[in-house]
Length: 194
Length: 211
Image (tube, rainbow over all chains, first blue to last red; front, side, top):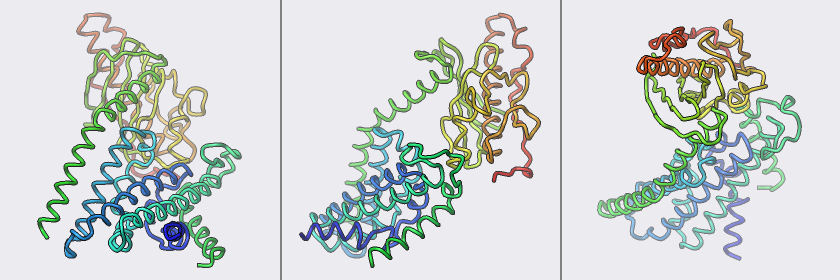
């Protein structure tokens, strides 16, 4: 039950995109399509799970004064490793996300969860928090990417729903990301009552 | 305090070195495979073997790579001034210099606009450049007096793309003229293109509109 509530907390109550409004740069930058948003969410989730786990394991060894540099070293190493793995085994995804992968290092969701959760909880809870927050982020990015893809290009996950000629190009570009995100946040706040 | 941070850094560096060693092989294979697939696509064949790779520089100092294969020549060229930055293309040429095929290797153009360059200029599409010979007439968009239709609302991308294709052609023409001169074969055939003529048409800063 405890673990379930941690998961639920990450997905809805403290959803990083809709409630905490963290990590806006990759949220707006990578969600030009549902697939891109989902891949970015999954990549971030992978880093988050490992960083939460490692940091909660070594938290008692780290003196308070150097905790932020230590967290950053751990997170940056994980992201670099992830980048190499993606380059080696999923080159197509790596090609579309490109620059945004190394930028996961400075995604404040990851450092935020290290500081706010992993540094105060045990390894197992931290893993569940990583999964929950990661899922929340992935769902949010997929949703946003899907909406922008449908409105902008008439496709969803690459499948054509209607002719591209009727798509609103605005939604593929940056302003569309802000507009769609704004409406999504409003809808989530209204329906989930948070 | 210092010891802990140092220790963490050392362990992290060691782990990364290990991952790097583990993934270096597959990454190289991917790059080689992407390149081989690209060369096959632009030459319209399925089993081209690269026999010689030559790297030259265009007039602006950007690298141009010429892949001579047993099935034809493919040239990789870049234009640094796409709408979103560097645009890299691979172009296959037939013997007389006409374009056999192309593929966009790397770009940072706007999705839904300039990113269409990968399809727009293919055979049968609106901006079809296949079969055209940049040696007879430099490829430019119709707005600049050329005969290639630019991607709708993406003139800057189209210009950058065509500049890169022209650079690729001149490098190809230069290389084949050189090869002919060495073998003493008919230099007449390629005389219309001087080897040094690797120039890029200048684009004025004003008049670049992409909306």
